[in-house]
Image (cartoon, rainbow, N blue to C red; front, side, top):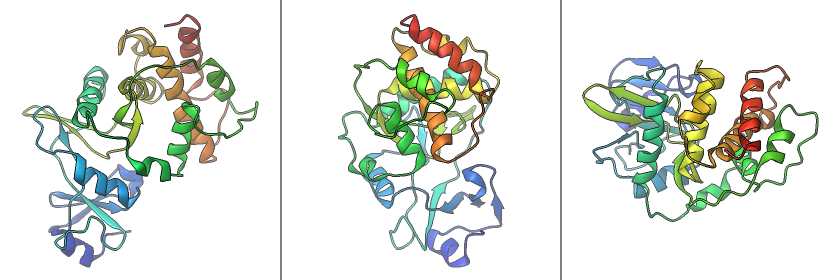
Length: 263
């Protein structure tokens, strides 16, 4: 659905509207503004306005824009700046660095209350990955029972992390990396990096060795296990088809081996 004219006016968006590939096909660019229907809790936008600083020198953030009246949501629509840069395939190590830079923006903040209010598939899958969701996983769901059984305790501090960085970091030769579609979770930073690694291997043609090289530190396999649970359980909660010989199979086998070896 095209953003209505009164929404464009409210956010000061001027120019022709072009549908963007991202945002599940619902995002539109109008001049220097990206508009899309509200797809998070309003409290998340309020929290970002209160806690995120757009002026850091090491990373740029696609923070929500206020309308002329000061509202972050207008008739169900939100707006964000169209930040310069492009997604560049293969820069997974750099995206891993951005994961740490992104978390540093929120260093010292308290856990946001809105995290407990989210009920969408992604939030439920994240909770399942970390043992906070009581969903019973049938034995015939591909991969999930084995991955859940492979989890071990992770003792690392949590902070605000981005849970979907792989396609949401934009690179520009003259500017710091930009992070868009801010998808917030309260987890260890290495979990965010593990999601990047899993996405890269399963969907972007990265070599399986990336699972070990993107973070060679001890215990990273436990984050990879949880990253796979997160992605596969999201598909399951969204009632998508899950086949044994799917895009996850080879990666699951490798990660389970790493976990068994205590990597």
